[in-house]
Image 1 (cartoon, helix red, strand yellow):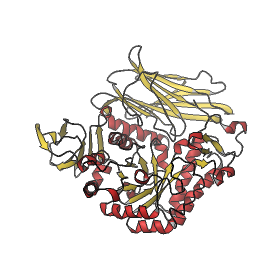
Image 2 (tube, one colour):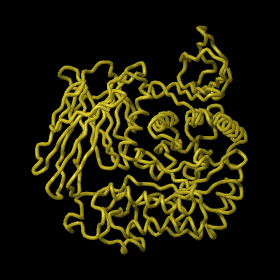
Image 3 (tube, helix red, strand yellow):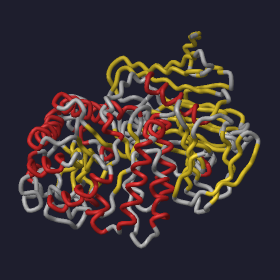
Image 4 (cartoon, helix red, strand yellow):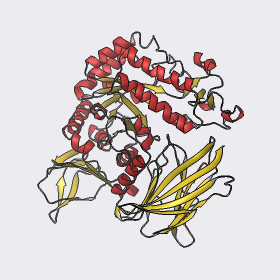
Length: 570
């Protein structure tokens, strides 16, 4: 690595100038240096220092590059890849929101420019879009734009890369760089994190009862499902939705008279047991609400709940104790820890007027990081193979320190969204087990069409959430067939080389390849599938709605019969 030290706030890079814009820096000193890495990536390192702890100034790191073959932009949580104007292309990331990474690429899946920020805990506001004066791609990263606690020293890094390469490789490479540069060591991912799973959410919602869950598990186990998530509802007798009964975390005895015995019965069927908690919420009418008065970040009025402030050590101790007690008392196998993204300040920071009294960590994102790190450590000390599920949009590298199952955000009945989000998460989340949002469909569907929900999710771990007791036998047989396929090809689907194509078209073709085989999902009617001219077994999964596929192999194009909703081996 060649290091060029330039103690300045504007430095020449190979693609143009990078500068730091900080109009109100006060007593802060800011320097910018450039590093050139062995693969050609160029890193801007920014160091900020003050004579004493004080609020850091908002600053923006600015650059622009000619818009040459930069037709689309990839971001982890956006629903399309449109290249916006620079005045409309803002996205934000922090420990519980997104990923500070953008890749600009052309119509042939080739990355032409990427930008990645090492800051994975604090907020980064990124604007990547077209500057209409001269057709440049503008790239601005803004720091300390929100509520911030006093600091004396801060440093961060931004990596730019203008090397042409496959966009999927660019995403993986830059995401790995963020992980390494931020010093993140992902937690253990047990093999069970990749097992087919039954979720109670869409099938039951809050109306859960032990015997009904057990009846579903008795059907799920023979189909090949090996994990259960009991979602919201176990802690309340109310089933009107919302989060007005969170905070005390007491079992509803009407629903679960003996939770430990119930968990044991489910586990005896060969199914691991996970439970849902909304981590930050304390109901305004709960017993614990008064206990933590003055220790909230604010209230989410629409949800009728207060949000705990993790900067207080007693708040963190309380939350850790809840999960440790559940693990010990009921011998469950994992946790679905929800709403981490609600840990934020609502309005003015209450700590400022109190001079941060009682808070041993001043930054909210840093406190969330500490809380969740300690939660995972406490749980893993008891059960090393503990399963912890998070969902979008907290999908950045920092959360992989304490979460090993990353699920697509809720998208009921939307298999296209599941496909797209699974591919994005697979590229960016390293070795974590990426899960589909729970699948549901109407049983009036032809089971061949219902299979499209599964094929669109099969490059992630499929979570089923249909009421199996009400499913026609033809639908249960279809589920069993696809679970068997997913497990027969598990190593390839989950851990093989993963190559999704054309995110701007919602990934119409996705490939996974291992040393032994390749599996290809086809989602676009009429697409020509290019297959290497070798003897490797190749499996095509057809989710096009058409009953034939077009394949080119060895220079020859042929149309192959394969019913939509099925697969074929070549």
